[in-house]
Image 1 (cartoon, one colour):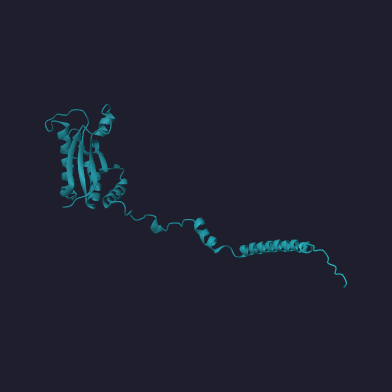
Image 2 (cartoon, one colour; image 1 turned 180 degrees about the horizontal axis):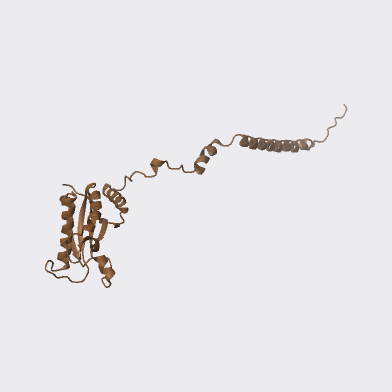
Length: 226
């Protein structure tokens, strides 16, 4: 019986070069797939990103002529909106006005309204009061007429004090607004602070002149009955 010869096993090391070859092919395949994906990305951008991009760069559109004066803000009370419209209407007349928590305050100096120490309305004050009355007739708000004086005591045959003089001047303006210009009396109120609510120092002539005034205060509240 002839002897049989067996070659010793190489423990699989003969095909080890094929493993390295397959690794190289796998790496090349991944590389070319990545290159192809990048090319497709350039040709067909991400639709989600494309849709979102315009909103980030969109410029605000120019307002049309009808949008230059926006509608009144619905969150602002109607009474406050009325005050803003009244202020806008009177601004062109150069009146001393300011918005306060109590309303729109129109300050008229005594030098325009009355002769010194009197409650007779000066003729030169009538055009100003007529313009104010035009605005007051078109709104339903309450109106207060408040007289103020300086700190110099007054005593003559008509008035015993600055209180009396200030109150008389408020009353005269009420009568003019209601009787001549048709503003409802039910909306008008008068008051007098005399010398106790100055807006300037009484130590100078100019300050005292600014303190002698009548304030027409258009309230943010609307009269309930007429």
